[in-house]
Image: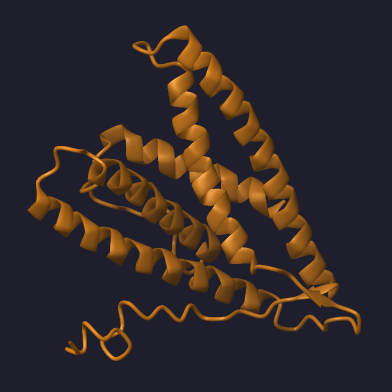
Length: 202
């Protein structure tokens, strides 16, 4: 199943990030961009998500310096753009893979493209990792760890359900029961021509 591969890579990324556990650490992708294209994209996607997860932790520090917070906010904005771009690259991979599939006459479109489901799966892998950390935290109370264990169990169930849904969607596309239609993200706030502040309007 496709998501077996994806979940394995997401865990690999998250474990690798936490060896150093710094948002400014050097990034290296072990998968070749040509011969291992989808693996390369999945690894990069989850790395972006993992770094952003920790950006979001840092910016919530009530003692953060305002100047540092502004810098970090812009890093988060850039990360969000990278995340969206990676989703589109992953969808482009699937569009190319299934380009010769002829959709059946009664084929339907899904509520989201495969890559946006994969985006949620990557974030879910981070939730699983960090919730598990809370279940074994030595300085946490027994009640805290018990509550987090319940949440962790639910997250694992969600991971199975979402993985199954993604694999089913890909199988349906491959069989012509569903078809892909990707809408590029038309974000306006980063565009010099669409954001009135960036183009200098008062």
